[in-house]
Length: 138
Image (cartoon, rainbow, N blue to C red; front, side, top):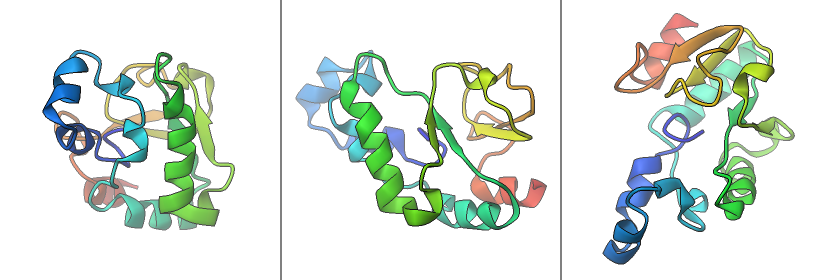
């Protein structure tokens, strides 16, 4: 989800300066930050299009030291993706234990690089810089 469906950095940048300083080395531990994130450009439309063709699940990890992240991610999915994403959120620190043909992720962490299907490296540092490039490929 983070930096794939949602704008993680944008949410952090909107925090007050005291919180930014306090959490500068562990940005994902800010209480409630995952509930404040907005969708990345093209992400919701891409989810809709991919859901028409594929059996799409949202596979995300949640920081162990931020318990609100787990429920915030669920609420984000409900709010932004609605009924079509019902019971399609999987939270795991071991993405490679899940099966599928494709994993769209921005980092190789939490088992993404070891995923048994094809890892589509999303974002400015990856081979797929935006959602249109993902849609074109798939």
